[in-house]
Image (cartoon, rainbow, N blue to C red; front, side, top):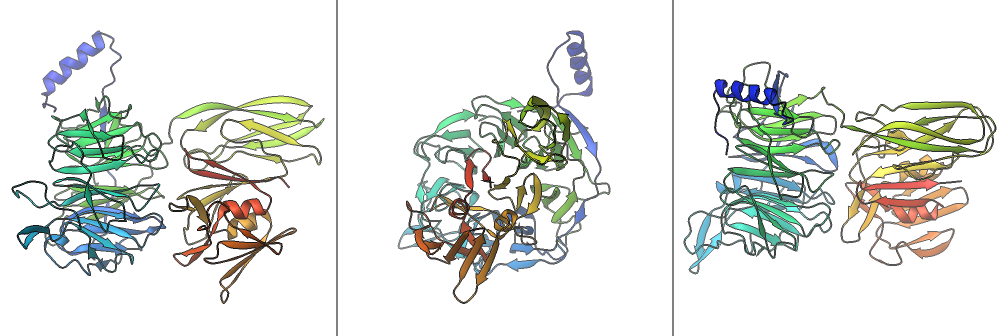
Length: 589
């Protein structure tokens, strides 16, 4: 892929670039010395190969540890619980990947090493894929259909990666040592989904979050492949000779894909072309990339777990910072890295027997740089002779807004220019400060027209925070509960109390009848858990006339209600943005 260059050659090339006034950008690698903290004192075994946050509680972290199973912590590693019931063989404890269903976090999937045995003259896979329906407390083998495709068994089909269809969580794909398999029943049964893929070992399987028919598979021998029809047919995207082992897709742009292995490559056109990002440390060594983590809040922020440590880029891979520990850490080889919502970085490491090198590390990243800003504008109209108002927003990456004030303005139209942070935008809001009558409205390309006296609430699927007239607050204080999409319904459900109270209403719960009662002005709504009908001011109505399966439900001890039905019954307008997964609830009363 890349050949090491001597310092002399590097200097000569650099001088030629300068003399030729070239515009070619050479990626730079700098060094940072953070204080990493070993949080694996309660873990036995090793190495640690995979990390995963609970989707409904970002304080819960899982670590897959070879030789032991899955460990869980909810207190930053002070205490760990081993979840290994059902992982009874040596191969089942060879942990490769852990994924959790975002709709029902009690459903977990585990990819492991595999063993083979014969029954009735047929080869049977004894390990490889496990499923838990009780939050990891117990595991069951779920290998039906995962069988070797080779006539001669060279190696058992270990599972290296798992991906879940975001639109239908019963659809799963796995990348194995024998190719790609698909399940349409939540992992209970499997079928070959490699189409015309070469039957070699695959390390990564990705699914587009815009189109679940679009898949990417990575073979360490044959490069990157893409399917546009859910795995029926595949086409090569190259990188066959570049020793690639892992893929990652941008959370906001499905056309931006990173491929890591011996260094890292980037594509901005869905894999048609690739650019070498020239990843090296200060000694001109090319790291081996084991994992790529892209921030869900800032897609330009990337972390790499490599065989020589962690690398960070805050500009989409143009430049890299080597996050070397401030103190000597032996065997600083990392297999996985994940970023929490509060910018704490966790890494899974090889460590040593007895762990003097540590198996799981954490580090608080205080150096987050906001994504690139784009200029936008707001057109403000007023019918007041002396309007005075404040425009706030949108916020920057870490939540600080920009405020613009217009005082004593006559009737007319005004344009205010602002910086809009791409990919992380909170609502714009207007606060009238001096006058007492009339209306003030605004238009902006990031928000709809809002009357000054109304209430606008914006929620994001998977985000435990909501924004009420631009002010951030927790939806479910202390519990980190977030809106979720029930895939089989195609509907969003939320813990509704904060939304109702933000509008000025009240909500109560009857534990005996399992009933929710909402009061808002002249509207009374009564709903019962698992009942697809509700009563609005005494009249019975279907919660969803088009889908009679939609009903209130309980997830993780929290009552979750269909958002659109509640909001529209209270007289609100509801808008859905499929790109940002934002729900905007507007009340104009």
